Image (tube, rainbow, N blue to C red; front, side):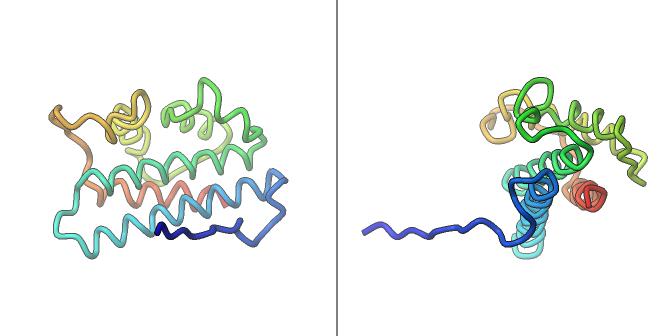
Length: 150
């Protein structure tokens, strides 16, 4: 027997509006950060693939939340140049007023984008040597982006 669970849409703003769509992206980004923190607290190895996957995705969702808030339709974020390209998302977000205290944010995003954007190498490429910023640097960046999207 296979068990299942039904996940209902979150209760909050009208999810058909830009405000509601931005809110739900921010909510899911926050849930990803929460999961990454749980891994950090309860897993003996702090910088492993699952944590990076979750953190990179939270950054993508946070940037998309910011961009929806700034007037870009959600459907446009699924198209080129945006899609999963953290650099394109971040560049557009900064053009639209995103300002982060971390002066290294652009460099970190460029660094991790190599593993997140094309081919989602962080999820599928296991035979290459990886050099990535420690998760303790990526996590506060994700949190700052999420906070800026409010």
